[in-house]
Image 1: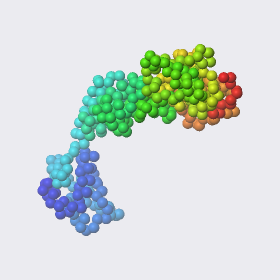
Image 2: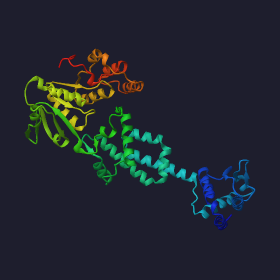
Image 3: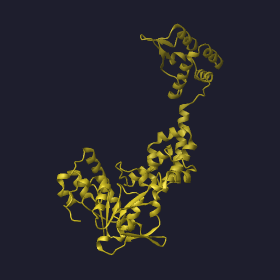
Length: 422
């Protein structure tokens, strides 16, 4: 049937337009027209006449429930392959649709995806886990490639550059700065598809390198020092401290300590500090205690706990880690007080990786003495601990974590004052 005839029939029976479009979609999805297709249910005499005018009556059947079926076998019976293709082409042209050939498109998309992944591997040979992941998601890459290979390649290459930068980065950087530097648009990483892609690739690299310690308490962005606002990166410290910056001494922390107040420093205050050390030479002043929770930190401040107190505010941010790097080498002993659950012990381990420390009030001996105050783990939390220990057999506080797995965890606020010395 020619395009002209199809056009005239559809002009006379416009209600058949959606039915014909459905046939074209089926042709693309199945790579041709075969078998039987449902066209609708309980047509009136006018609709049935329109169907017969377009397809003829022989290919049409009506079931007992009133369902109309079109048999492509009977429709094309006696027609050559060329005649069948001409019928399908005519229907597409009458509808103003370009006929798409699924098999050809699939072959083209596969070739495009293979080329893209080869280019990506050549440009970023160090991202092997990501290449392996994409190879395992090859069908997905093909579907994305068929919608726009150039755009997909641009996005993958930008993601690769950003991932490489963040894996080396050790200082706070904002999403806006990343977008401006690597995409020419400060908004390019503000909850976009590229944002999700970079985050996924960073997690893949972490998992491969056994660094995936995340339990939901922090994000992949914070682990790679990406922040919304650098001014919001702060750290709070309490102690008789002096610091030297740009060759000049500064007494702010010491003066606040004398007033019984902790000092909260922004990243701008901390950046560039050359040395941070106690103002006095007594042994007690050279002990550094890091504290996970605000309530217990404030209690230590009120009690004038000897030494220097550093508040981690949960997982330590870049400002906390920077102060710890400055203070720990100046201290005779570093101790950490936190919860004894997986998150709390991970916090201690993050600091321990920067400079060795000991657990305080959450060590194995203390946990054993406080068994009446332990909070039980849920079965999922126990499984999480098991998975973590399997991935990190050298975890520095494994003994405490295994004790927690079996007996429960000690919350900082549940520690019984007076049980420990110091």
